[in-house]
Image (cartoon, rainbow, N blue to C red; front, side, top):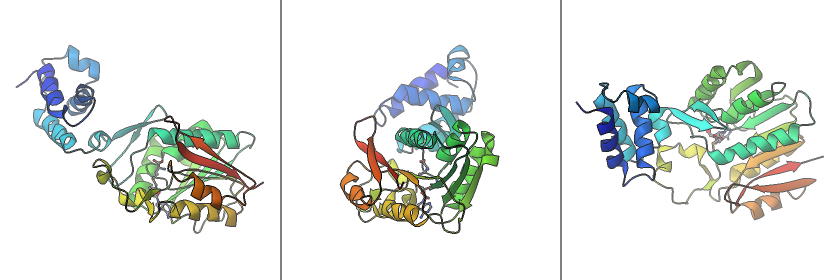
Length: 270
Ligand SMILES: C[S@@+](CC[C@H](N)C(=O)[O-])C[C@H]1O[C@@H](n2cnc3c(N)ncnc32)[C@H](O)[C@@H]1O
């Protein structure tokens, strides 16, 4: 039986050639395997834990499985969400989309927000937390995503503000909405995916042959339903093609991410 510090060193060593922050990730996995906090790992060094469970987690990570799927937890907008295989892991850059919705809806009381592509529910849940007067309808074609999103909404006590619907785009939804938000799949079908991305559902990543097909359909959907505001995440190289699609809109603007690359747009019909 090894002490916790010894296990930490073995784990970090095993991860060194696979991840950038080997000791940090080994600490997280040891914390999950032992049920101890990262501080307790140091103070309770002699505590016996289920070593097999820890080694299994290290092996999964060595196989490039994202740490969020191994721990079942993902951080988004400074909150911890449940996350599971079969559903996209939320990304830090999507936090910018939340800020766009907050800014566009600021003058609107009791806004009705519709989202296409719930995934783990992070967008709908965060908007419900930050705009307690809002109602949100969030759709996804993936049943696993809808189940996980509902669980996340329950754990943040915002279920009564959000209706999760399993449908494509906003088919069957007749509510008049103030804004449509989406972080849709937007990678081109032939784009070589990094090996960690291969663990994530393809339907959540691939947006068609060019990558912009779903985004273009979302723009058309917002127009058909006369939704006055639209904001979406998109790829860094999709601005030109999407600007063309948005040329009839009264106002369309692209925003950048932390790396100063195009990451999304906002558009207004009125
Ligand atoms: C990139 S993920 C975004 C998930 C989550 N909103 C987030 O930001 O982490 C895109 C989501 O859109 C869903 N999706 C793909 N096509 C769809 C469609 N036609 N209608 C509704 N949802 C769709 C996928 O299942 C996936 O959950």
